[in-house]
Image (cartoon, helix red, strand yellow):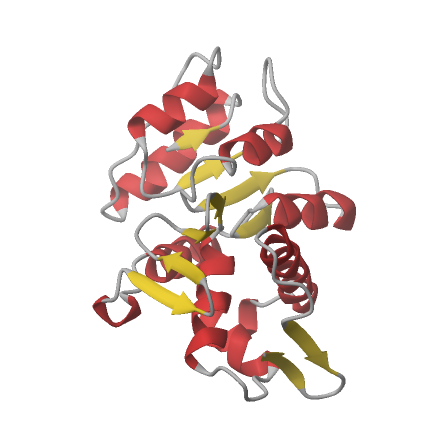
Length: 219
């Protein structure tokens, strides 16, 4: 699903994706766009920041309250502030216009591949008294349930699987993107910080520790 009010760019992008085997939804009306996204529940959302009626970053933030649909920001805003803000709100990737079509297709393929990770067919992973539901994309303790982004799910799953040993940044970056050529090192830091805050929300403080110069460890 492409949410971009620039008709020329969105039509060009739609044609590119269709020519490469993707089914594309291109809404024309941006009223109540969040409700439309949730109703359609696409496999991937390509989202611009400058939209009628709503800011794309705010839209992403609200989307993440109830959904972990993979999101790639595709925008003309090429400053680090907007990129960091988008990632902190739960974007899976950030691409600036004008983009290289081949690179864009690679990024889309990588995000879709990450979103289909099987987690060894387990739908629920247990960590202490915490239940990690990989189908819902949430962590739950008692009556508190928190939605994770796809990146947070991958990081937490990897840390739980390798619990009580140091996991290097390179390991996590490989698990996230499969190809370190396209990794922004700051993105991992932002995702770790966001995951740490969500663990605090369910009562686990200081369980995700940083080992300076080495990586991270889930205690």
